[in-house]
Length: 406
Image 1 (spheres, rainbow, N blue to C red):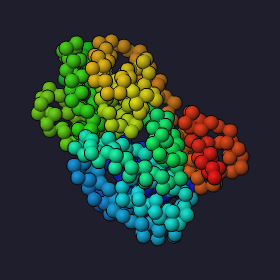
Image 2 (cartoon, rainbow, N blue to C red):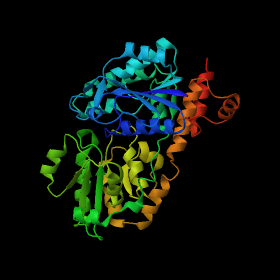
Image 3 (cartoon, helix red, strand yellow):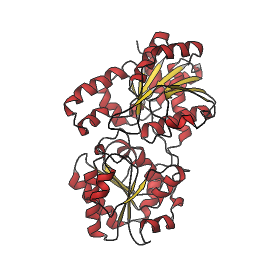
Image 4 (cartoon, rainbow, N blue to C red):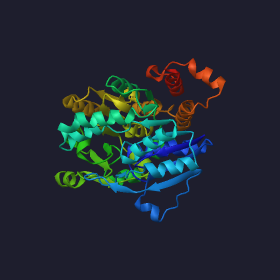
């Protein structure tokens, strides 16, 4: 197929949306599909080549998001996209972000009769509450619903989120599981020298946080949990990987924390694998890719019971805590820290071993092909017999079901 992917964030920007979309784009290209990527121009584009396998990259104008450094939204580009897609018509379009560029893509696709799907990656309604705009939450959610109803299908990462959105007026919601690179994120990358630089002896506990250091990540609970752990393990250290607007204040208030900054690739994988416990208190994740990365690295995890944790975190490799129960979260973190069960590391790895990127890419490609009407008769018969993904079946089956609806 020829697939158009439209996104307002993309690697090397560091966030779950950018990394997920990059994984899908590269996966499609490696599987032999022609991928056309439309995204805003990034500072690195001035020096870095745009060629990525068979991915054709089309750059548009963008503007940085206020109060969210490192991210931007694309400016409206409906006319340009219409002209582009008249010359090189995609079989299907995937719109990953809900900004002005995403709206333009859906309008252009509708005008040209190209089947378009969307991805629900970010709970912007939750973000509004954490940035002093709680009164706008209903309006933000209505805006999200209106956007996604313009697409033929909305892809979400969990059964839980599919049910939540479907019950609130979203139509044609389809689960597309997330993958994790288990070759990159691997317990074998544990590094004694790195732990020594953190000031952690072999018998001491290294607790790790990975992600944006910002208000929406529920940072006070992370700090509270670690201070409770310290009462049990006085030599414990808290390692913070990432950056964000709250980093300076957090560092000033907690001079004993180790701030490792932004890490990528093998360096990031080494940081995960060298830790002993991942404490993830965020309440605003649409999914939480970092949970999969920690588990693949063999790191026991405590997280609230939603998103990736609900789908993949088991009692053998960590603890899921009732959503919003902060006292229980602290207790769970302390319990895992006290046990330091070596078997939990193997169980963490096993919990995500089957989340192979190639299988997720294949499901995505099948879904786009079904939207575009390009599945063969045999494939249509195959997916028609599979239960919809709301019950754990195939993504293509959901798309086939949607296409058959009047």
